[in-house]
Image (cartoon, rainbow, N blue to C red; front, side):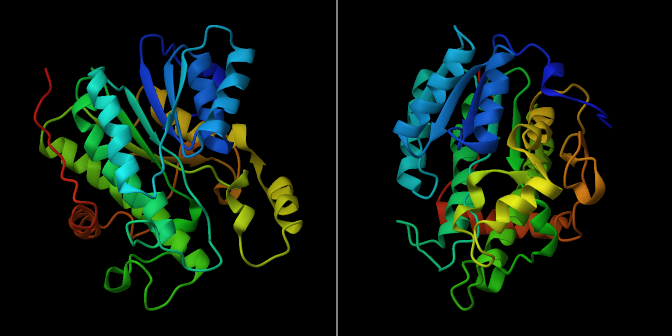
Length: 309
């Protein structure tokens, strides 16, 4: 339990290197900001270089000397994922933290990625699966690497519909989003199992922000848009507070391997980081095995656990 834990309690991250996806706004921005404040070198992996650079300038203005770098990454494109990963691998520097944070939420209409995948699945999950696998060699160069995959309370409403994984037969905006967040949680647990199987030192964890006021719901179908910020403000918390569970998972000592963290308050809407509740679907090892197989088939990425020198 991390009762009362705040970003001020992040241990020194001096000498560590972090990659945060979707770091130009919301949870990703707050995560990058806090890690830079703790002394980490942070790569802000953003779809828009312009927005990424603007966010980086904000952090540099607050923290002169912060080691912040911006790189282009569109998780909905496997070519972009491979290009980003190739640049990181070419540097041959250890990566201590990979925060799989970026996401889109509940697109009103089914959209297809450039690779032909359902867009939410491509952006929220498949891109992160591919990215983690491609970056595994430099993660394994770290003395104590951690991968944090961001899920959501919405995962509890989801099913992994393997018979219609890309929602081609029946698309519903929020159901598709919820499935991607369930996939992220199942993946985090499966990645930990893989790490243990291969006797690797990598820790895989998951986190969710509760009900946090971010821009992810800007395309949300359903209620009038002016209602959404009111609900999030009354029942939820700021994006800075929402980022705490993923920051805790990424940096706190004594985390549980394969652990899942979220806010400690009622319904896990807000509060300081604490172990979160996962659905039965999320902890089913058979789901992890099947999801891993499908993810390899769709992305063409397999994980090489060969120890790195």
